Length: 191
Image 1 (cartoon, one colour):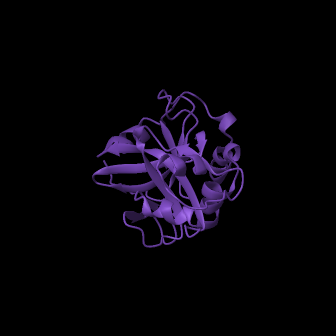
Image 2 (image 1 turned 90 degrees about the horizontal axis):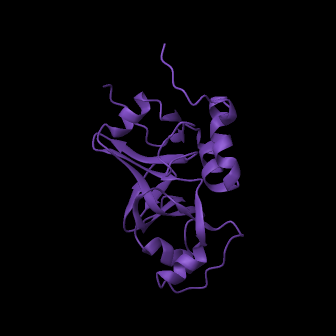
Image 3 (image 1 turned 180 degrees about the vertical axis):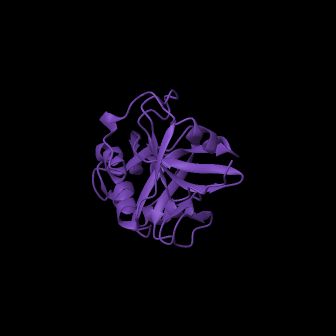
């Protein structure tokens, strides 16, 4: 199978996705290499706000929500007890992988501590858990038409991840492909 690198791409679950964790999911791939892939589902908020998470993990500070959309997200079914922060700018946190020139994924508590002090990243999406695929697994799922992929330009990526209301993210990613989710067939075909 041809080697592909989907780092920085969106994955859009096809309508026939059987796994309930990923039904109508929009994931952003943070790392994809010969060992597998790691992504964050960016359109599944959970019943927790960022200030509640900070309290729960005993992070002190005067955190003030930017607005009422400071949700915590279900990032995927792997390590759901662990926090993952997708953010801009990249910064210098203890445990970070750069996804692109201006976007990174951090798993260390220092980013949340800085956020509580008002010194965190300008833009961020906090999730519990991540979506993970072993070596070749994502490629196999793509061959089975479980996902659509789209590589967004920087402006579209930033807007979809950080700015759009949750209910508009999937539609916006689909629009990058020129496709309406409602028009997708549940049956996959091959020519």
